[in-house]
Length: 329
Image (tube, rainbow, N blue to C red; front, top):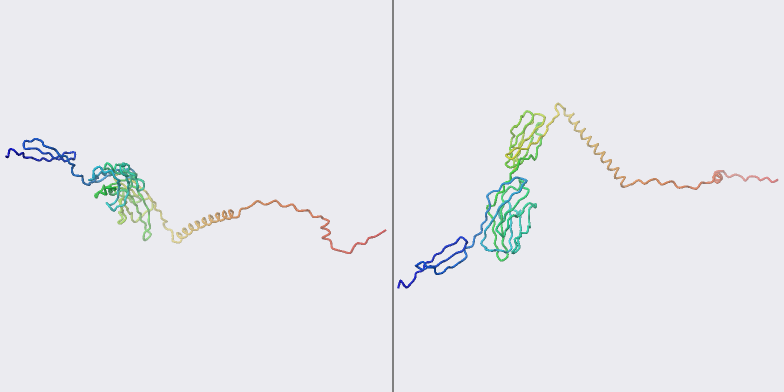
């Protein structure tokens, strides 16, 4: 009886192409039949690099590719990029593709500097950012949304860190008064890596280290103070990092030995000169306005008048008297 029955062995294997193949053989190894079934669907996933570095003023590409469980999806989709944090960060780019279309129409591009490089239909959401600035430094998150018959979405949780580097640039340098007729200088510069600041000037030599001002550093900006300027002259602030160097200067001149009255007179004189200049400008303006409101017309030629008779004038001017006597011959 045992020889009359054939025992079946079932072998199952998954081939690399993603299909599930089920084969049945008898005890002698002869193939009975083969069944082909679809492999289990892929899960949602997103692949982004940990960090992308670029220089300010240039362009950067933020790569992002994804997989999803909906095979051969051709319905409407939306591609989104956020900045700062996932799910809640502000959107910097958004585009939408209609059913069956590979063209993703841009609906939002912050400041017109973001452009989609990838094709969402081919699971690519890579983004290009033009004209980089230090303010663009941060983390970005890609997201895709399916609509239509399938409603599904997925967003990267770690995101990609964009690191923007820049040579130093001095954004402010000034001399400020302090207590007791003293003066101090402040210098603020930005760059990435954050620049080192140094002062040089009278009695300081070259490359004197500056004192970092607590509470003034912000992001990519660094502020350094030069306290108690003791000498008149030119003070120069130098900012440097691995990408370059920048410098700016400020001048300090004080009136030595001048009395308070002289200083006050000098100040009043300067203010008086400004007041006179202001009055002159106002006078010219008032004259121009008057001429515009009352234009001057050319004098009309005098009208000719009838000449009066001298005889009539004499008659009018002579007094009335008794009638003259008429002598007859």
